[in-house]
Image (cartoon, rainbow, N blue to C red):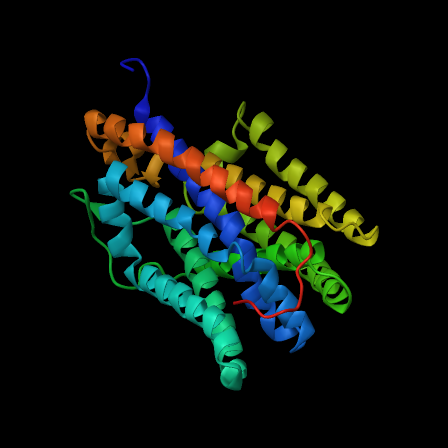
Length: 334
């Protein structure tokens, strides 16, 4: 493996884990975000049952991505976490509170209204925290002597708030399109209406973030607009427009799976755009993936385990989705 750049392999693996988490946990966070708009009773029960078999397994990728960052890119981990501690703590508390609310909603029906509010609140906090963290990373983190040199609230800015709201809307869109696929009757009809409105809002938010990002740093501007790379980078917004057209057309024609597929492709295109802006930096404009990486021997040792574990995760995740591939019922989850 002497000629193989293991650091790049690990960067791709962690990037894949983050993307898998965003799209998989994104739709069940989205259902929590949309929960107040669903009618109490059948609509909410169908929504909860549609994610009951898979929601906790989706978070496996968050553990893999965070653990991989700590083990393989310890310098990046040591810089990013202190810069975003309030956001990371809020996200984890939101995820925990949401998980507790999910379970107790069925087991404590006398306080179901309270647990529904907790489920929504936890989902909104987790989604906003993830989006603001992304914005904070993109806008730059102050680094001196390989350590975070900023303040407690450096992450807070108009741009990071914009990315936070954009991720919130995007997760809502994933949730709505998932419900179109997995529910029926009034719940599905309601999900279609929400998906249309959220589609417009999400594409507008994505456009706003895309327009603002090149102005954060001259390097971003060069990556997106200088020749000859503009001939390739221009394909991302073009494909996004095509994706939007297919999305709204599929909604109008009453398709069940295509809106969700287009929402996933939209997130994939956003992730490609993020890669164009950031690579090869682990901390933009401060630390590259090679600067942040653990020793090569450690990377190879960890990679030997990852090549076994990742296929296992993919296998049991695929099996779970296949087993529960039908429509969600309204019976209580136990």
